[in-house]
Image 1 (cartoon, one colour):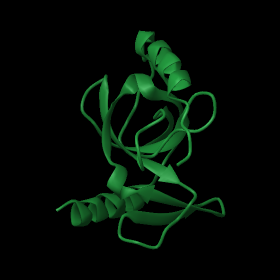
Image 2 (tube, helix red, strand yellow; image 1 turned 90 degrees about the horizontal axis):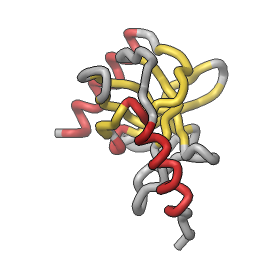
Image 3 (spheres, rainbow, N blue to C red; image 1 turned 90 degrees about the vertical axis):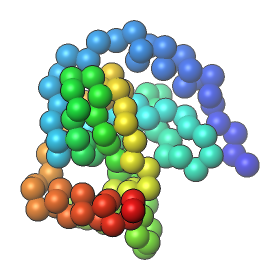
Length: 129
């Protein structure tokens, strides 16, 4: 089993908790997000900020959003929704849907189109029931 650096993540998490999120976030946006160092097969963040891109599915209020992580490691199963952007293949990891604080969001990447967003939400409905 690969060792995980939980201590560094805990230090980063303290900094995130102490910050105030001042940006505006909307459904359909992809953001870099400090998901952290997680347990087992949960999606981890990468780099010093423990980040990975996430798609905002639902903004509940200024502080809480429902997100799903993205990956470039596309697997061929019902829990991965593949799509292409600028010639690169990505996938939404449908099984890793989670509620997060907006304090975890670090910077906006882009907004996806309505058609792709609807298709992703439909696939989430199919796999989550």
